[in-house]
Length: 487
Image (cartoon, rainbow, N blue to C red; front, side, top):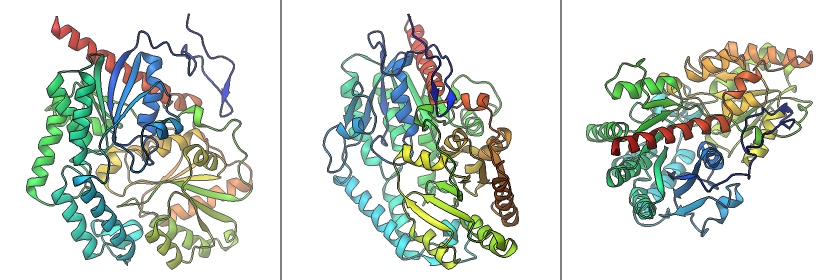
């Protein structure tokens, strides 16, 4: 008899009767096992919520995860993952430590590049996107050289060294005979190659999940034609060998279908869209009161063409056009301080408006977002990336039910914000429009009518449990196809 969740609330909203077992009440006896390869895994920072929530909820849908990930430098064992919220029922295999052999060289180069970026950049107002990092800052010649060296010698990315430890660990675990399927998630793309090799070695069903595009990513540095050809071959081999390919947007799915030789709009069960989402369990309950100050909050980092410069320009213009808003509009940036962005804030004399809140644990960041007046999202000012990706934070923004100010080209994120009535969208070049939207938000804040129009029905589509159920269905289908083929 399956118990149901009734009459409970999460984040101040009713929890639906899903017919699922409550968390922690999973019967594992009949579950199958899926080998999950993910270089990024708790307690790593960054974009880990997708795989973390899959690992958390897959057992409810008949699949117990066995995770292969990298070792933690200076921290032995799997305890940190459990401390970060992963169930102790999950088997975690940590293999390959950053700092060893080739990985150490790659990490050294990464740190040198990062230092050159922070210390050797020149502020410029005219740098083209391909010459500029965040906030319109020109990349120094040293950093260009070091980036090119790293891209030249480490393929397909800095984590190429991890392919061998991942394959050895995965192959050894598969030999125990109880693994029914393989799932790999990128970034980094090295993980895809490990999945490809395990598929060739074992013949097990394989689901490949692309969080971001590979060859059609204009911000990925490709130093030579040979490298470009190698990336193209690898991507093609991965999508052709995988039994199912997951993308996070329909436009990216169309590109994958094209690579498979199919029409972009052709129905194909092999390529499936599973968006990012949010977990109601992560929302504070009850939801916090909105701060008495008018605060615009941004959560995340800035890099490449994901630049806050248009927003900062709008703030500077606002001080002249709407002087009455001086001292009444504030901005909070959640995440590690970016020295280049900090320099732009000082250069534009916005220190009294913008504060760095620093890094926060995931749930604390959501609390801060939920108590904000407006939530800011900045999407890469690059047509393909904007078309293929939606920043994961957008879904948590929507769940916080605070209006969104999106700075984005026309693309997947812009359409989502508009279609769900989650907020307003402006192109990066529309500084005046951004300024007027800030003033309009403040006016509604004064009238106590600053709310989000996102519907509960729209939000339900993006719940992590619902999305995990889609992944479980794919795993079931791939295993069924394998069994049918064997018969």
